[in-house]
Length: 387
Image (cartoon, rainbow, N blue to C red; front, side, top):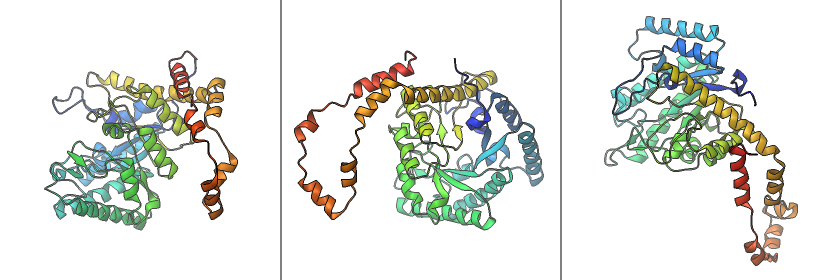
């Protein structure tokens, strides 16, 4: 049996809010005590993780005094140092406090939008102080329950204005920081602006420095909209915009479940891991998921081990897929290559005239089979461990 032990070189990370989740849901109170950030660092290091991520208030309470803030940060830095861990990504909590109930960057109240910028600048400073090089923006409250309340065109303009402000702030401070924007279709708002990876990629191109900004797609978020997450990630990879990724599991079109990676849709998880590994993704593999509400702290660490172990198992399966002689022979038949035709599909007047005149055998094209049933069955057999 292969060794599926996580190691730092695998670049697995967890947010303080993930393993630190206390099991509260909209219908139930917490079921386990809060785990201190320093203990989270210690335990994740023991399990083979590479680093941690945090929202500003995961570490520093929103009402902490400057002295309390400095003490907390100092202790956390020491824990990172003692356990050879790093802070990989930071983000701002712009959704928990009642001040953000109408949104942060898209609130109808300009004072809220200004406060959101203030809070974000302080949070960026904190993340950079702790060593982060990636900064995520999740607009969880940037949306509506009733479209009577907001002009969506104006709201997107406010959103862009705030993002541009922070882009220039980071540049002015001389920080080496990339922004990763995270889409989600709904929850906690009825509808959230910029709901999918494609929408977010389009929005990024309107910002003052698109090269500084990419996406942070999440399995559950695209699955909430019934979409194919692997295709969304492929679009980000193709545009060199995959700056960070959130791995978890989710039943299609449900609320945001944040299950352990691989707990649902194992074939989808396999093709996602294969996509990342085949394309040389070298960024963090972040597990934005929670242990079941049934678990105590011991169960939380089993959850964390399970996320990493499943990824490594699927990584090995992807390697076997790429080396399986029958699968590869079938793929070589399926993925036909015609050098002349490929060149003819690069536009020129000559190629256009050639294609217009070429005698394609339409009946033969329609009659051919592609062997996808056999390919999918071989894939399933590989995943089920009989190949």
